[in-house]
Amino acid sequence: MQQIVDILSSLGFNWHVALANFINFLIILFLLNKFFFGKLGKVIKDRHEVIERGLSQASDAEKALMHAEEEKKTIVNSAHKDAHDIVVKAEAHAIVRAEGIFKDAEEEAQIRLGKLAEKERKVEAKVEKEWGEKAPELIAKLYAKTLAKEMTEAENNALIARMNA
Amino acid sequence: MHEAEVIQHESTILHVYEEIPTISSPILGDVGILTVATSTITVMFITFLIVILCIKASKSKLIPGKFQHVLEIFYEAVSKFITSTVGSEKQAKIIVPYVGSIMVYLLVANLLPMLPGVASLYVTIDGKHVTLLRGATTDFNTTFGMALAVVITMQIVGIKEQGVFGYLSHFIQIKQVIKGFRKSIGNGFEAVIGFFVGLIEIVSEIAKMLSLSLRLFGNLFAHEVLTVILLGAFSIGIPALWMGMGVLVGVVQSIVFVALVTVYYSMVLKKEH
Image (tube, rainbow over all chains, first blue to last red):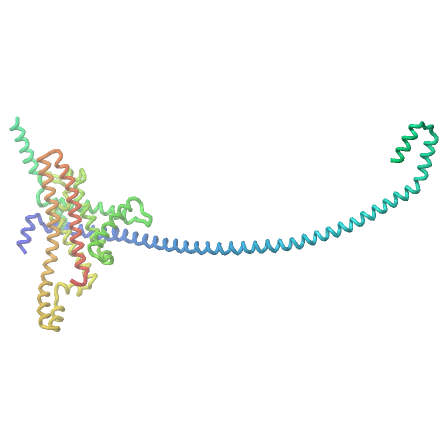
């Protein structure tokens, strides 16, 4: 043992200095252990957890998105179908309605046409009646006028032609 | 003319030879039973640097900044290295703080003398100039104190992991001897041999301490001495290369030390020998 100590002291071994350095190193070991590696290890582990959680949440969100997409598809499809049904129904309804309107219009037109014809007949009858009342007088007047005036041969002929026309 | 040059050259070597660092670092004074040598001052300075590092590191956040990134790269590298040596991630996690701390300390201690200006600080003792911040690992007392601390913490970790009796039974294998004799006489004698091997293991713990400290001290001190000699022999070129070599030596020796300590730790952690 003494020999070993002698050999070591030839290398500059001095246990007082070694003790001081030993204590110093223990302090360093404690500091690094606690504040450097302990802290960094914890931070890295925490980050690992956060990232893992984030990733799993992201995959969940992706799944939810896919689900929503499918739901959207079915909803859109059913909406399309509904819309089609509504259009078909509306068309049928419109045809029925249009036919009704057409029929009503025709009937009204018929009625109006009938009324119009009656009116025409009335007017005609009235005109004929008035004509019957007033024509002799008018002719008489006309004759009186023409007879009262000396007519030439040509004038007479023209008049006859006009009346014949 | 030619002769004069040669003489001058020789005198330069002689002049430099005086400044070759002594094997023991110069002693500055006593504090109680502790003696403060120049290397102790360096260790204190390193402690100061490491306190700053720890303050920075303890402010680590979940979202890292630039500096924290560098620290984390270092952390990941060390834990990867230890995991590949130990083999199991769970066991590696236990020893990362211990081994990693040694790595940080050794890197700072080995590379600190490479910084310009650090070696230029002088104090005068008995009319002689001595470097105040002598490279911490170029003093055997530092490496010895360090190896002692490493081996002691190793025993503590071993006891923590395997229990007091579980751990000590590797060294004093009485239980195995009794068990062996109960089985058969042959097994009993085998266990007796195991008992003596266990006793030798105690010596091997001391040997670990000595081999770790002497290797580190030898390499770094030899490098320091050669630096001074080369600076005297060639003033341009080669010393610069040698300084670069110093960075390499510092890093490589740190890694060697850490690798060995990792292996020792993995032996302590394993239940089976």
